[in-house]
Length: 170
Image (cartoon, rainbow, N blue to C red; front, side, top):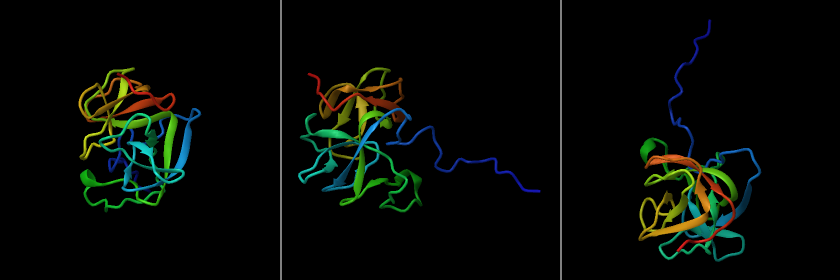
């Protein structure tokens, strides 16, 4: 008689950064990555070459943002998975990234958000650059047409809804 596996805890969670959250119609485009690794679930900007993208920078404006990087199981990690806490995932330079322009997606909410609150992109250089949160302040770019679907706790993954790219609030 076979033994049933009753534990599936390795790398398991409710959702992952950059994972498409619905089977509704979504708009995802392909763009070649310039300059640096584009991690999953982060805002990306228009690159300098035709049909390209790059990570956000400290001077990024809403007009620069073309969408959010979609998680792909077909993309290998530039770091080995020996240490899950430091496991980097994303699209390397010269790879072709999938970028969500309209639809639902899961993303890490750094500081927490309320349901329906506008998404803010973190522009300050560091580990969270390009990640999403809510609120206003220095180093945050508020996007009016991107909202948190439900309330999400700080440091947890929540769902965003992109209803067009992109406007900045005052």
